[in-house]
Length: 480
Image 1 (cartoon, helix red, strand yellow):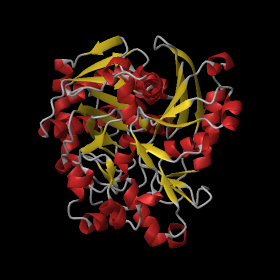
Image 2: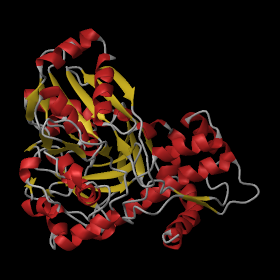
Image 3: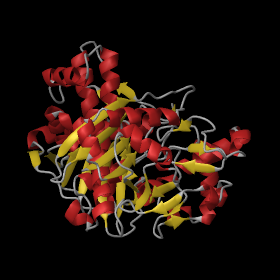
Image 4: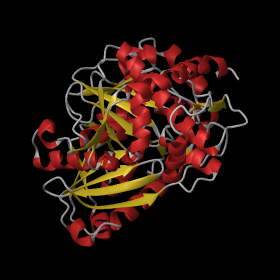
């Protein structure tokens, strides 16, 4: 059996797969995000560790004893800065933190070929601008930094004592030579750092340490190998078999991500498309990233007094698609693709006296769909073919939302059995590759299809005017 652990933003999920690839056990533990100032988003790194232990210990002890390897997945970009004793110097700055907008401009100016090396624009979500912000605003902390780790790699350090990171997660730092799959001295120097402060680089299917004896005892398992793992989106792709050129998926978690596997490094910075390494050797991927997806569902549920996501979906269904004029811009944490705008914020437009909680709920479902449609558009403009998307993440549970999304994007959605397990499933697959060997295409097989949602032509036509209004709205609100 193989254990996959996903260090998410809202919680940690641990999943064990048996020898047939079926889920044999799972556990979860919640996390909270701290926002001490506007644009800030932080977490305590040790909260990840405590939640990881809680999630693992929630799995049946007999299942844990049978685990032969562990893989890690996690939220990307988080700046976890450690001192000489490997203790965090401050809370980690997360992927949806927008404070380092000015520093992005500095890095673009400092490294003329940044786009060619990193394959991406400098964005506040990435790790390098966060370190540049620390350099300017918390110099006493910056001067004490011995190591910078990503969230899942801090958990690895606690598990194994090793400082290592895989290629897919490291590609999101803006310090990686993405084509060469190695740290870039020029990009590190632009933020006043050196390779000595970075973890060792490994492929996601490489062994990157073993459980420390005391952790093995705590978790009730042997001192098993720990694989390199992957950033959450790449690991999620591995979990549903998106490891071949052209394989595409939609991840509906806190954020929304459209992911396309590629057999070569294909950057396209013009549309704010990400180009990263995949978590399997010899592969890369493109991503359109939308910072708020399922997070919008939770937010509007609280705002309208809904009992939860299921209640909100039911309210939206009572209203029906395109039932009102309301438009929702889902930029609660800013936006990446295609706008690269950390400062913009969400908005409801075209409210009237008949606006109701039901119509607001439906507008939010549509607004996230329209934002995802923007991502599909710029990926297609980059020459990528997208006709079908496999769907993973917690947002995959709602068939009604899927019908709205398919029509908003005009793309077929393929729902996979167990797809809501997400990145933890891929992390377990990477552990299996690390321990047993084999090829990614053999081990990372797609789960059985649960159902398929084709875009309804009539609904596509009904939503088209609202999608056009949505697209026209961003340039009108961005300077507010």
